[in-house]
Length: 316
Figure 1: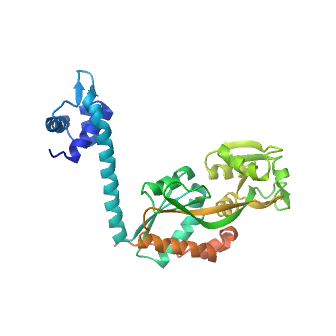
Figure 2: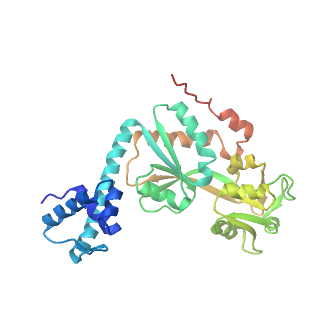
Figure 3: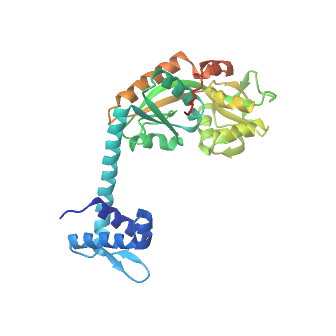
């Protein structure tokens, strides 16, 4: 018996879509080609895998048993295919990086630009993901290196310190609390634009739950929070390095006291896989970069000074 990957893929697709015609469209082949693949598969296993009616197709009892095994086998093949692509990437000098949204749109582009100038033969691909997906992206092999706020390491993940940032209030310069010795008690009295409902909870656990924060808005993305703060609809709370983005909205950062609260940003790496030479080079560069350039002190002039010359390409 010699089952083919194409047969397994056709079997899973028909089972999921419950239609030979829909499966053909999904696989970009004709309905008759799908039927032939299933007939050949059924002939090899010796039992019908589908119950066919004039209206729809459903798995037979034997088909349901095979479906679970086929799913697992197909998934394992996709992992092998990804591994083969990874080997090709290692030879080509490619690094895939995943970043939580805030660090992905502030520090990482500057870091990647400098790395490209230092290592032009290595290609770095950056993907931004919600923090909840950063570690899983590494577990699944979609990225080799991840960046984001400190979280407990998940299975097969190593978390390394990247840098520490003080939690600050991002507001318009004319806000009553801006630019002075402001405290958490004072901030709790003004509307806060929270990025995710859990974000203020994390802070309250460190600065005290009483009195409670005054939540003005709850949004999903930090740029939305900054835009609302710029419109005077509240203040945002974030690490001071976020000023690289917030400054574009005309916001200023005010350090908050009693207590001064710090957050750790981490680098996430695979524990079960060895880093490629390209990824290891990038990790070493990133570690040194934040030692040489404190992300919390990068003002507009410094960012402009650090930005590498614009890369242009002239088509012939």
